[in-house]
Amino acid sequence: FGSNCVNMGLVFWGASGLKEINERNINVSNAETIFGIFEYCYSLESLDLSMWNTSKVQNMGQVFYECHSLKTLNMSEAS
Image (cartoon, rainbow, N blue to C red; front, side, top):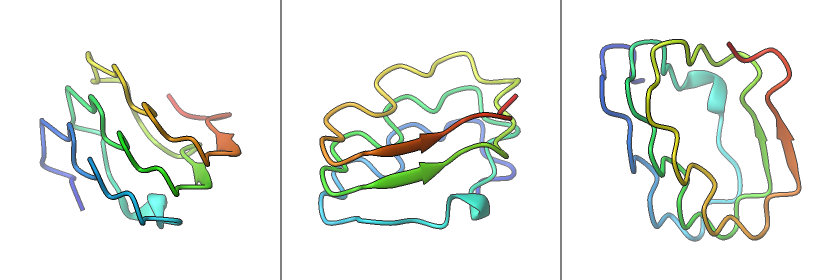
C-alpha cells in the first residue's frame, strides 16, 4: 500500500503492540514525508527497509522515535 501517497507520516503511530510488519508491502516511492511512520511502535523488533525508495522523501524526522524494542534495522540498499 502507499504507492500513490505523498504523506506517509504517522501511518503506524502508536501501534504499540505491533511486533512485526511486512515492510516490503509498503511503497514510499512517491512519499514526501514519512515523519514518525513507526513512532511509538514500542514492540517492533525488526525492520528491513533495504528495498525502500526514499528518493522523494523530504521529511524523515522521528521515524523510529520510541521504538525501544527495535534490535535489527536493515537499510543497506535503500535509496
